[in-house]
Length: 312
Image (cartoon, rainbow, N blue to C red; front, side, top):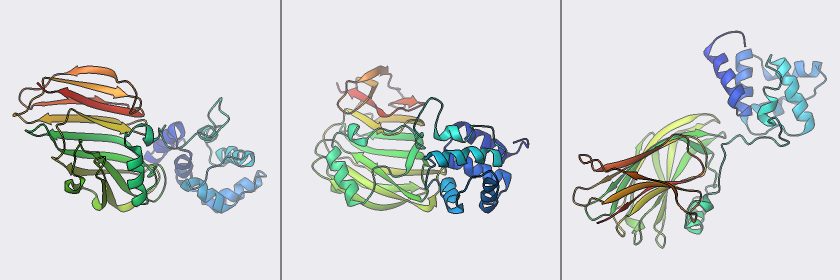
């Protein structure tokens, strides 16, 4: 790690933050060693391991967990001229007996979305796993409230990072107000994605939409894309909230009101789950010219963030 190059700087960062497989892959790249050569060097140290296993480790398809595998990781640090324990600690942090998960801290979506059964049904129709292999590192969302106090539309610009290989889509979720006509909700792919299948659950007003990427992401890759849900149906809106299953990343929410329907009070809030009491409430001042309020959260934690408002 003596050379000061972009590759070595990236390796130093990954050795601090992980995940393990990206740190290993970066170390192999910086050292310029083929897996067969690494296997040979490990054998010289009395460690027998297959090239296939090494390949799986650097791809994130498998994770060293057994004692003999962890011994091989310690030997890899020598072979790749890495600081002692630098790879090993990404698997077993100091004071921990279990390997650390490579994806960010997460919470079940069931605790964050009130109609969890409806959402589970829609995900099953799309044959989509609950963990789609992506977590958000940046999300800027703009919500428009119409002259009839209705939720007109919401526009998202989102930055995601893959925590496994082969991810090529994101499933966006929209929940309309009571009486929402899901068949009339329009979804548009704004940039860097294409619209796939769309499914709705009329009883709960939930709509899910596949947003397809043009390439499959590898673990650690990021992708920027935008999309829009256009609604306009349902009862008058009194709040907008978003649930976060993963920790980390920045979230910006802006709510803009039509000049014909301005609220008398706005406030931000947080919740640990859908049924939990609201905390962190803070009054927000409606800007006169732009008729909007916003919140910015730099380091999102699993839970719910939102803005509520009162009509006069």
